[in-house]
Length: 336
Image (cartoon, rainbow, N blue to C red):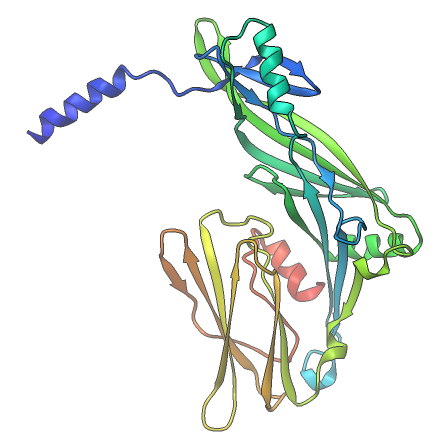
């Protein structure tokens, strides 16, 4: 019986039409927006993404921020001579179509002979953002469409220091180049085959430290530490850099030795949450003794992986990011 049912479903699926997809070589440019016709349904059209613009804050100032975190080790914390820097650039992105655009597009399509046109957003299979400043560039990639909201771009040690120096000197123009890959089909011979086409645009941003000093922040983490007390800054860039699409949450448990038993604190990082957190233990500890930590990864299916307990000396920074290659890991421990 099960075999008969399976055969029945296979027959149904074999006769089912291909899923609707935009025909990438059949389009119209309407009101500055490109729309693509579906390869099977003439009345179905796909709208290309709207171009981004920089949002304004409530006080009408441009919605951007630049923070640079620096740490210089000290003898009292057991890491004298260690130095690292990490930069984070944020942009408030507005990406919505102007009011009434869909109505204008439908009207133009009807004037072209399309009956009852329907509109959908075109699929985006990949995104790349290139940050260009002071003859330098840094690329940030994602598998998602860039939407309205806050874009967080982590900067490596070298680029963070270069950009900060340029901003201080008034060399403030930054170009944010977006490139998205639009997915659809194109006809080759008598068959429709999967295909893609690039969609590119550039958003200039003027980082003006003299006009908006509160948008810029340089934090020397070592200077905020109290000798004899535990203050630990934690970073997690897995979600910012989209390193694991299946990751739902990442937790870190930190244990410091105290009288009687270890004192344990837990911090959780999630998508759209903060990439930096801080633990301030209220009990003093012996700075010569290492603290312990372990990382718990939770995937979107509910599975959980827990690392063994690891040790680290000094009250510095703990970066729990799972970087893709060893060079990134070395940069975090040695330079960042």
